Length: 76
Image (cartoon, rainbow, N blue to C red; front, top):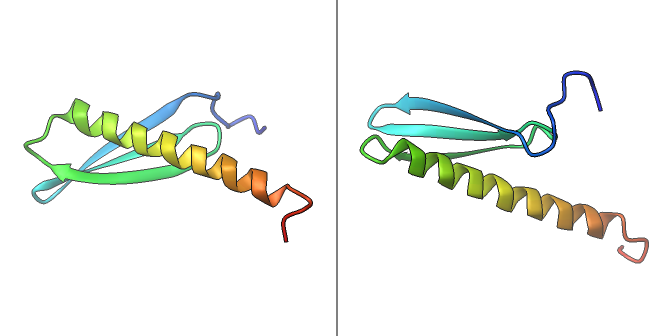
């Protein structure tokens, strides 16, 4: 792990207004994996953050399952 890598479990959140929407990016500090969602400016920022974190955790789970398949010697 590099000196600049974040600790496992830490998630960075970025919020950017884009017209009438807000783009929320969630980045896993340990892997650098990033996901984004868009929501209306009228939505609660906490709800949007929570949704982005849920999407990131789901994507991290997919990455683990994909790596398990790729590391399986019986997989062609």
